[in-house]
Length: 399
Image (cartoon, rainbow, N blue to C red):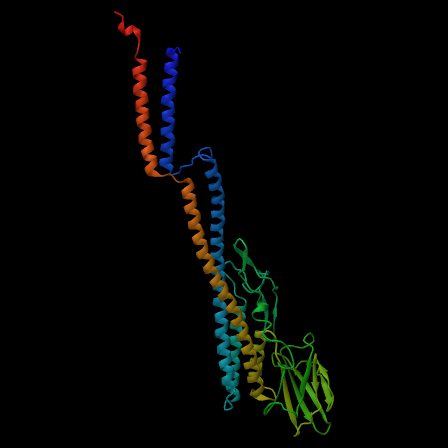
């Protein structure tokens, strides 16, 4: 084959340029720490790295979400723990109120203390997080969940639970509706509506609760039955949650009748052994706050059963409220354990993804530097050989 001078120069320049290209490629790998600089370098590894990178980014977002959920759960736990402490203190005061040696003035002081505890519990029920959202309002996080006062508290939130995604298949609630915490602490039934006389719980000689229509019951109400032997009947007075009489009066009912008053059916067939006789019926509220207010009113203005009925009512309703708080705290504790496990799992996955990505993308510095040195030697050899070949000419032998 005939080799022309132009072919020698073209081949020589092409070889040198190729060596420079290889050196620049290796140099970029060493500088960036990446073996795959473009998809063309390794299409399979590049596609796999892209997929893993997206998965790693999603896992990182889940880790951030887990942090948010953990903070929200800890805030809920803190508020519920405080509510439990307030309720425990109120229960201790209720036990103290059962001391028969206390004077009326002492009970009024305790009533003032109980009103303060009511306000503290109401403030906890209206707690907000760092962004100003109400944590017990359900989806209505911008609206104060509880409104009202000692005469009655109403829930303005809904039943929703705001949630955040903490894994591919898990959405975790980060708020609670107040109705699940402070409401529904007990069920209205003949067992929860108690009748008391001045001597304690009424026996066979007083009114008895036989049936309850929960939808028609006036929650947080006291009824006072006063027996008139001459008329052989009971006169009934309704007392509101704040201790004030509520009109209209239910009226009078004859012995032997079974009247239904505000959804509660009473059996008046028993005749009291003594006359006059009086009995007090405590109808609790399903709302813990209302029960606290009702007890404060009973301390300030005791009914015909004195402290006997008020203390028994307080202990029963406060214990039911404490059970509701503990049940909710158990749920939150379980979620905190789950967030910790998810956080650990996320860290392990992140490390696994990083290791796999490193194997696909990262350069082996020892191999790359050795290759760079080898390519530099090739370049020097190409340059030297080109100089020698390009220097060959017959004119060098002509004189």
